[in-house]
Amino acid sequence: MLHFAYAQDIDSLYKEARKYGFSGDRSKAKSIAKTAIDLSPNYLEIQVFLGRLYTWDQQYDSARTYFNGVISKQENYIDAYSALCDLELWTDNYSVALTVANNALKYDSTSADILLRKSKALINLNRLEDASNTMNFALKYNKKEPQLFEYNELIKRKIQRNKISINYDHDQFNKTFSPWNLYSLAYTRSTNNLGSIITRLNRAERFGVTGNQIELDWYPSIGDKMYMYLNGGYSDVSIFPTYKWGASIYRALPKSFEAELGIRYLRFSNTTWVYTASIGKYWKNFWFSLRPNYIPSSVGSSGSLTLSTRYYLGDANNYIGIIAGSGISADEVRINRNDGLPNSFLLKSSRIRLTYQRPFKRNFIAGIGIGVSEEETSFSGYRTNYNFNINFEKIF
Image 1 (cartoon, rainbow, N blue to C red):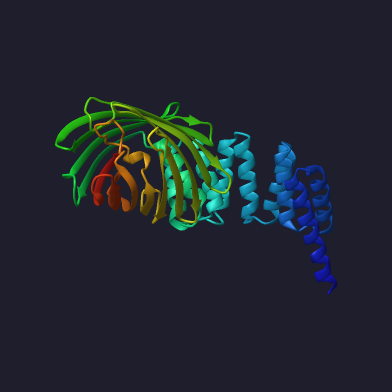
Image 2: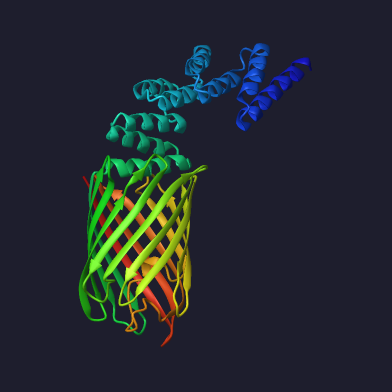
């Protein structure tokens, strides 16, 4: 009974140390943690936490002493390796962090925490292929760890130096319009300093008119947690906007959330502005995104809401998805009426779309999408739009 009460007392000290540590009073947290360690020298979890407190205060030598002390007592204590990896990554000792991670993997070869840190060390050592292979291995055994999918997306943006994409979209209507076709050819180049740059040629067949559009996308990074999306395009045919541009800024948030704020400009015979935002979340092997759009107009503003979900089947290139929404999305502002108002004849709309993508052979990716939407028009009641999409990508 005394032993149980003693253990409870040590646990209470640990909880109190954590409370003060996370609230910012790290000096008091250290004092309490040291008291607990004096009472129970083999309580390794408290020693790791004390090491983290020293790390947060940039007292790195003291932190290393505690982490290495725990490892010397229990060689397979993964949390100590994880904390020591963080310290070496934060102090730019990437080769040391890699060694620590490899030592930890001898005892737990599939640890998501250690594999993630190993991948970060490899990225900073400019060993991009090794980082990608490490992350793919991590995803194979840890399919419900959202931080792995999130970081794998970052690696993809860094490692995919060249990509050629071919896309075909077909729209079939039950009335009012003949079928539409859209063909796209894109080339992506990823750079260390400028981020990813995409050039794209679109060719459309709509309303008996055939024409082309050229576009440029750019995804510059702003540190580790932020990046931007910039877009520009031009066409000399009425089935595309004459000019278009867009800008968004993305920010990674705690707990695997990501937020976006953006704006789009389209110049038909009149000008259209679209204000957009999104909030995304990785959860286990799911990704969710909720996107509202707002289109102001002197003849009546409009908006839309789109929910996208992906379920990852293995890695970030292998997933099934579903997209559902209502209202005119920014992507649907693509045709104009004689009065120059894009999609102004659409009053209400709802849509659903299923997607599937997977890699095949080496560095090839294929995807397919099937969707249907119900659209209310000002001249013919409701019509149904059936959409089919297929795309191929080659990474090199």
